[in-house]
Length: 233
Image (cartoon, rainbow, N blue to C red; front, side):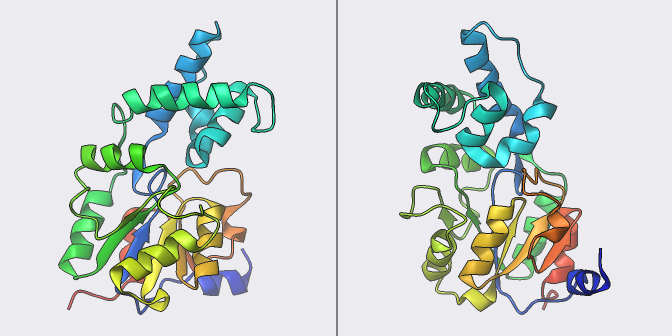
């Protein structure tokens, strides 16, 4: 890492009052259930299961990324729509079997609430999946705002979902920070005019070295986010 990037990554208290989180790979480890749906699709076609470790990096990329990694089929390929629908159907029936909050997230959310910092979720996951996952994790009534992949006309990396979240909270973009584990999260947050923090403990996808992403900062554990936030009053 260059000296300039090291300086940029140094933790400092940002002047924010709202923290917005990505869901898959940032708040929650959903890879097991997503991989399970992929492997049920594979089983239907007489194929052996793919290890979760092989699919984990693609868990933030939705059906497109997981079907690509698990079935070798891209959105423009013949048969993709059928595979996507089968995958989503299986996922809908078992989306909170192994899914859990990442270590440190429960304590982080409690700390945010103790500091009177509102927090919410902005995800590309559709509402029909997001709502039951958040409910299973005990977060549905705690999040100040939830923006799903079909809440607005756009999905990340478009800034629309993040702008929608800020508007719903009556917050300025300068008062918000977005935390995510994918390059699209950083691109969306930056385009919205928000500070962005990369969750290095997450999936990170196929966006290259995350330290090369144009983020405000990086955190190796959820607890490190507190170093980027105003202290408890």
